[in-house]
Image (cartoon, rainbow, N blue to C red):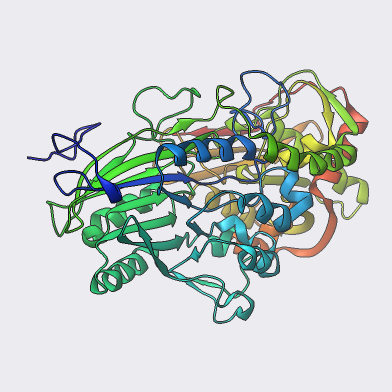
Length: 540
């Protein structure tokens, strides 16, 4: 009897292969190569830094190595599906300066069979996404996306596609996270419930006689698990992205946290005999997903085998792809190689999701400093930004313009405004509502602050305590008093659900671009010795 909860299982014997990928007991072999959350890692990256400059064994991934390994696997597994689960945009200065055009050029070099759309694909608005989708050689799928009110996107994607591999029809359904509406610049696009969309499209495909159905999901591992459990009776495999989850059997070679085994198997509620296989491949081209599945003639999953490929330097970079990158690299480095400062220690961004971090303090301080220089008011000055606005660490030593853009790749405008204290408290409470891990707390909206001391007590109902800096002293925040607040314009205009800033913030004034503000601050204060000073405390 086949037990799909066992690792590394193949529920058949006497595996004698014949033509068309069918083995002697009529099982159909389907290989899937998959990647997700590429995030503009065109050149080598590392676990800690967006662009690897160490030139040693810490350097991983990059498009040339990703291409090389996909070609290697296709030689071993001809006819394999190659699937991209979204978020190719954003993350390094390659995207910040070169946008969709360079992205489509190199992503199209990969022999993709289908693409999902990620939330960051909307970061430069509909106008930044439409030409990218139009340029894609492989179909783009998004079943829960409605762009009726954004006609330039119409016809550039489908809810599902049916592909033929080795004589079998395979349905692929695409999904994009509903978080896109609040986290990106999606205009009038509508993001419907992905689980309902997956159920609907799987039923349509089943009625068409398609009995191997894959969901290509950019919704995150928890949504994928719920989808498999609640509506997975007609779904066989979910290839995921968005949550950057690393699935691995054992200790990961990169030393990173493992979110579960590869693959995860989820039993469906309405048919306990049917299990859905879930795979995803971390992020940033550090890993490449690699799964082999076996189906019977009725489309029932009977076995699987596989493990992601760790894309370290034991895998070569394709020389032709690397040569194509070089002119772009030369241009970018000529623009961004200017020294802007020096740090005596590493400025690490990873810890900003769970506690006060020195790089967050420095950016928030730079925002307050720039605002004070403008003399916009005599109110007490404060600032905050969210963890998900800090995207990269800076290594000890010389700081260049490229480091600043990798740290804050969105090139956000910074805005200052007056705000009653009670709405600042409301904003900080909102920061606790979005989390990856509740205990100990880790989340994308953890605020890094300046001009105040903030305590977030999450032991029961979240409570917020704020002390405002006045000279060298700190006083309790007055809920009815006005404060000068400086932050990223995206949330000042209500993004990420910060409606209170948009509604109650008054006299909004443009301060500058985030990286330009930080550059001026660093040039004036370098060398920088990163420290934390207990301005943020999280209790839970």
